[in-house]
Length: 476
Ligand code: ADP
View 1 (cartoon, protein in one colour):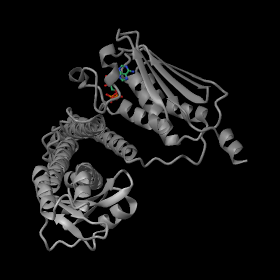
View 2: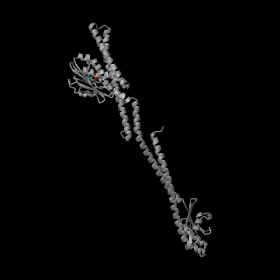
View 3: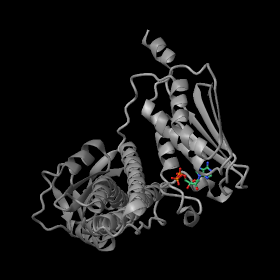
View 4: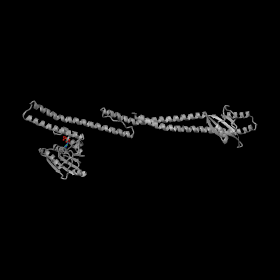
């Protein structure tokens, strides 16, 4: 598996290298042909000028007024001035005078044939030399012969080589720059990813407080980093909550166990008897009941946490269920000489709610109202069906809840003024359980109180259970 950086640079180099390579070849061949062309034109102009200048001398030679040696000297002089070899070829193709190596053959030079037949300048490149032939015309009519020059192409080749070197160097430079840009770009992508990877590994190793630093990266990677950090934060918070939950649960389990152990030991070793022994037995029973409630609340919460909820298949009659809850609490209400008033609207339809869930929620709310309302207080239970929601409201005129604690009352194990509540039975799980259960029915718990003793507390439970009539209607 290749690294992202290598892949990115490889891709840039491949695409750019191909493009620049094609451009280089095109530009190079264009430059070659333009340079050779202009060199040829220059040489043709020179040859044409020589041909014009030779017309008179050749005429004299033709007429015998100039001997062959004179012509040869004339040609040698011209050759020296121009820096090229010069030859004069007769219309029949034989060399009349030349500065060439004598082995030079005029027989298969196409430029000569062309110049003679077309009366025009012609050129050709052979063996790295440029040959130009220009007709020598007298009176614009008679062809006296052809001037034939030849010059080495090495100056052109030198010039071309220089241009090719510049082109290649520029291409290599562009590729190098592209490599550097690719490296820079890939670091900007890779660095934040590497940072996230390192943090993920550290988290896997148990360090949950670390976060990825992606502040100096592109928008998309910064968003990815933020999402990752947010996830890390959530995991940390969840684990902290779980730890706290376990610590609280152990603490809540330990105190009743210690109380039971103490009394059980006293009874077992016969340290107490008579009325005292009976009292201990009653207290053990109470503690065990408390423990039992605690354990069943914990189990219920863990069941909800595990998403074990399945939609109920049977409907309940809300009126009957609420009446049962009220009946169950009546003895305690009577003990405290409280007044419990129940108003249940009679238009509540049969609803798909688990009877036990309704009992847990309403039972806990009534239990709190009784617990936190002094003797002789008033408690109210009102239930109604509004806008497809079941609304259950439990009010009391007890001690109330300080407004600053209201947001926390549904937290697990939270108890207002825990130190002063030692005497009251309660674990701080009641409202948490009511809220978790309500959420299974897309519901919520709203607790309101101004915290002034006597003004009491109002707890609203809003649930959205499915109506039996709706289900049967959709089944049709
Ligand atoms: P607990 O087992 O302590 O009753 P809950 O979760 O039911 O636990 O309630 C959390 C805390 O909210 C209680 O400890 C109590 O301080 C406060 N609270 C709940 N209901 C009432 C109420 N009706 N009146 C006053 N305080 C209440």
